[in-house]
Length: 166
Image (cartoon, rainbow, N blue to C red; front, side, top):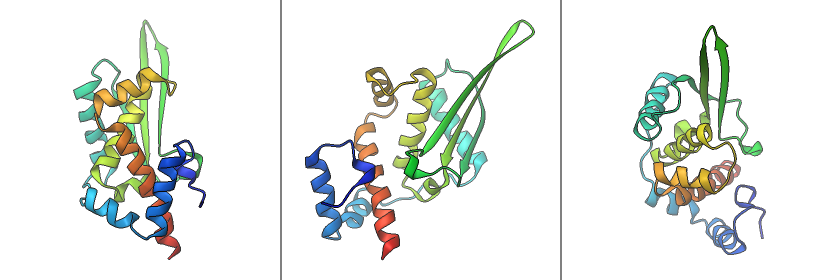
């Protein structure tokens, strides 16, 4: 079976289904039929507003976002589809926090559901640092279809690679 690096931690059953879709040339059709649209969040400013709206709906208690951007420097191979950072500093008698999110620029071409999944994932890290049960519960609270979207995003990443080889 072809090595499916983005699906390495999934079950053998899911990996074989994905490999079959790829080998039969049906993965692109599957993704296109399920996710026919592309989002319009193309600039860093629009991304900031998009993420801030999701944060304000689900996670009002975390501090404000200091910066949000797309980056072409994030490497998917290192499993970095997005990055979050948090810094806290004492300024006088106040504790100031600096929260930022960076999203891989390849998601400018993604369906809106995949961008939302990445954003939800990075926002959840502000509350839960580890990928544990509480982390995934928070992700599912913000996006009920989180697990399916994560799988389909990983399939989309494979499809992008296989498509570029053709």
